[in-house]
Length: 257
Image (cartoon, rainbow, N blue to C red; front, top):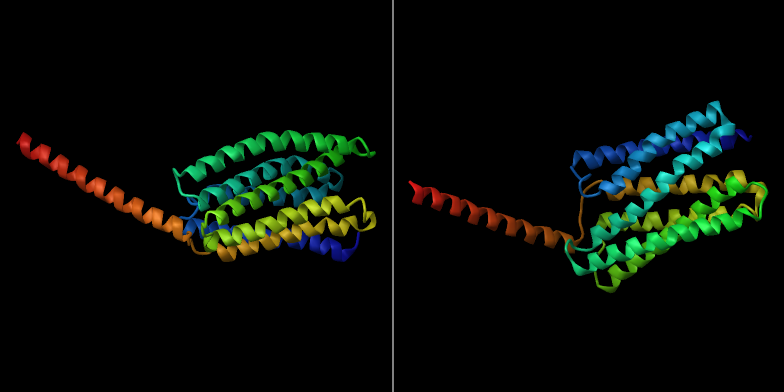
């Protein structure tokens, strides 16, 4: 293997590990993990998964495709939760838009996952390595579906005039390109077979770039104007309710005495 390829293959994940650790530290430092629990879980999972993949690639390269495929399944499903993270950050809690978005999200998962499996199985029947093709096709079609779902969520938000806010702008406009690059790379493997080892680096480069963008845009928790206004009004309501409850307790105690 080309030494330059080996250097990128090992150095790029280490850079990604550094960015992911920095991101989780910053989110925990400013108590923002509670605002982005699914995104934090996704980053935390990859933070643990990457050293396992690097160790497998170094000590047992033949087992790398199998280990990658097994550990990649949870990551792919966690990407669905990031899409829900985007939806719940854009739409106000207890709003009709969020309820509709949640129902559409669940329906989309029920329809997408079986369709992706069927497409992967049909594609695998045309090649001589069906197991690898099923895993590659599953990731390709699932990433494409997730990119379409992300586009749908952002389109609905813009249609209703909902502002994204700094944090969500960084997440949306980096997650979308990563999903598209990941899906497009799998589609070009058969066309550019000789360049496949180098094409396989493009999703890793796009993923690392996405994490770096997340570090920049999530460094400080800045909700959208709509969510900030909702939390402010909700805080005032809680304060008024607490004051009323305290007055009631004091009145009961006074009457009892």
